[in-house]
Length: 352
Image (cartoon, rainbow, N blue to C red; front, side, top):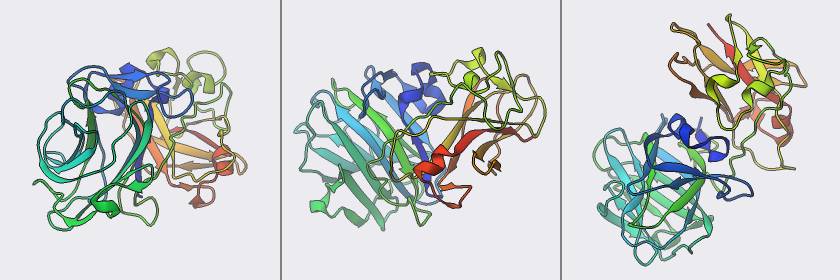
């Protein structure tokens, strides 16, 4: 697998940010400030503000892309983006006072430090969304760094950097990336996050200009109704809230082997390249003890369930998001198509 994670804030509110991100400080969800019509974005509410995400890549390469809009000019050169491992920061990005983008080895978020690697000649306009795509390999001698804006390489005269030092101590690899508010006054909106590693024949380079489409179940029953709604008769109605409402609406399982799958609206796309489909489940135990769950994708036409092999262990303390990410349609063992997504229900199975 190369596509590791994708997200955009369309389906959650400020109180849900800790369910998705780690190291959260003064982050908010800004309504209708995403790149697309009626989409949300993460915003920085104060100084200092930061947010990060920890993942489990299979190699030392990271491809991370996102939409970003700068709302005011920089008044200080503080780092607003970083790539690191569990203990150190390897790479940082800041906006210089002339607006150009500077990349450095080391440093940390919200500081003006690190060893300069290179800078762009391009500078963003205020109030305009851009698509940033970064492809980096973390290594002391064979490291690489490419930075594209709207598909065009911005570093080293358009060639990017290869065989450079991108490892600031620690390990030759990465496990996290993060954002912070840049400078003394500016704010940024960020959305449409897509993250790859380099371990597969597909989705292993620059993610490209991707839109992350959030789909919420219809208020109907799918092909599996093994769980019990806490009210009403329609299982989809219990899990279609934005944002997550915890114990107000839910479906519950009482025995292993039960499945619950949900019908989703058709994608608002006639065609397109689909990198992956993520079944993001919000799970919680109803009491202390142990139970496990797996994601389920159901082929509607074939009436066949495809259980994930990734086992999740929810907690009795609070709801947690668990992902079942698949780069291929399990019904065809091929890349997803719009028709294939529209012919799929998503849900959950109590494994034990």
